[in-house]
Amino acid sequence: MSRVVLIDAGGANIGSVQYALQRLGVDAPLTCDPALIRAAERVILPGVGAAGPAMQRLRDSGLIDVVRSLRQPLLGVCIGMQILFERSEEGAVECLGLLPGRVRKLPTAPGVRIPHMGWNRLRRRADSVLLAGIDDGAYAYFVHSYAALDSPDAVATCTHGHAFAAVVQRGNVAGAQFHPERSAAVGARLLENFLR
Image (cartoon, rainbow, N blue to C red; front, side, top):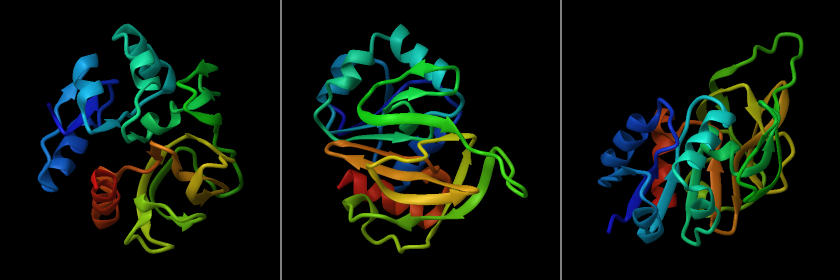
């Protein structure tokens, strides 16, 4: 049994997430095998791209109900976090529904470029084990055009023209809109906290 597994929902960041975990001493296989996913102690759902193709990949692999039924800690990263919500405005996609709310396109504003790409500050909204050792105002690396703009489960937010959920947690379900695998010490700490 693998202690940590990565669900193969497609996306270009999977290798980077695996490498970030290896730097923490964890070999996490990439899998679509329901038995391996159910048996893991921790499950990570990474993704880069769009909500529609990520949900289609899960559907084609027969993993929608598997992911919805997980009781162990689950961490969604980037698109993996976005599809934890009920719906995404990106293609009007029904998502996993593990978190209430919908994902919307980041609003445009003077001087605000979409996609949001680069380093930005995290602002703590609530206590969470995921944020242990991460200072309020710490920088993380983002690449996205859609976000959960008003999630009651946000434990950290970020602002790019409009505030959005940067880290969410509800029970065993958590997510990071930023890329921990590209966020240096802050990203490594978030992954380490999740693994603990």
